[in-house]
Image 1 (tube, rainbow, N blue to C red):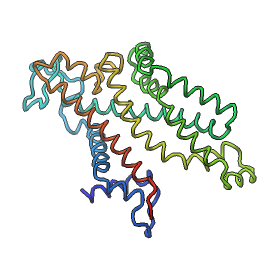
Image 2 (image 1 turned 135 degrees about the vertical axis):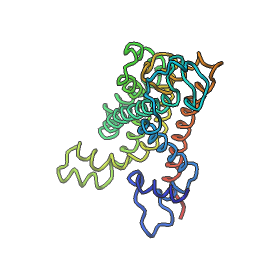
Image 3 (image 1 turned 90 degrees about the vertical axis):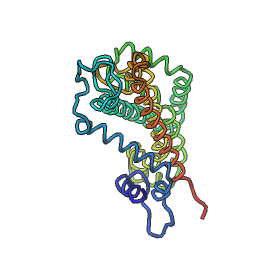
Image 4 (image 1 turned 30 degrees about the horizontal axis):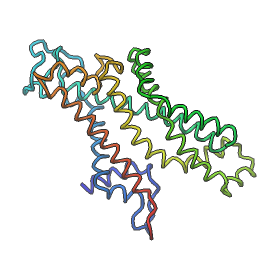
Length: 298
């Protein structure tokens, strides 16, 4: 397990600062020495890899129908059974992972982009800009986000690309606060004054000198945000307002499984377990990154 962890660590070394030979335990080493976090990261990568390579693990298509087996219990031919249309549930679970993970990723990417942009403006320019952004953050925090998501998703009729945009547009506030706070700490540093004296414009100072030092806390926030985005998408899909069938996601598989609870309980258990495992894993990874980056006493 330790060898696998360090192999993953080399592949993802860009997340953490490099570790010099003289350090006893740098952030990267501390992260992969954290057993729950490293196992959670490998589980996420495993599920993502199997989902992307789904055609290699199942002979059926995501929407392939077997009319001889409708709403069937697990069999050797269909290891998780079939749904009310005769579609293989294991196959749909794998393809559903593709779309659920992609929606969550796009949601986090959208939220991070908005949060970084607004947080940078507030933290660097301060004054009226900071006041306006802070009021906008407070406004969004006071809005019942899930109600907004329901209304927007209903209006979009379950559009695959619109759902993550809406989730991201209502979940950028913590990122904005983190970036704003970090830039306010760094804005008075000598190297920033030196860059100004050399004629570097505001955009160059923020992008080249300030933002790179604010990305680590944003990474921690993004891992937790990934789990929240998956829960939001699953909730919307379960209620019928998210990604619409026949495109499978773990959320709409849960919704469809309500009719199969008696004949095939595994139809609800399998996607529910995947949502639970992936959300828990992202939270463990986020906690692991936070602990790895925490200052250590010499």
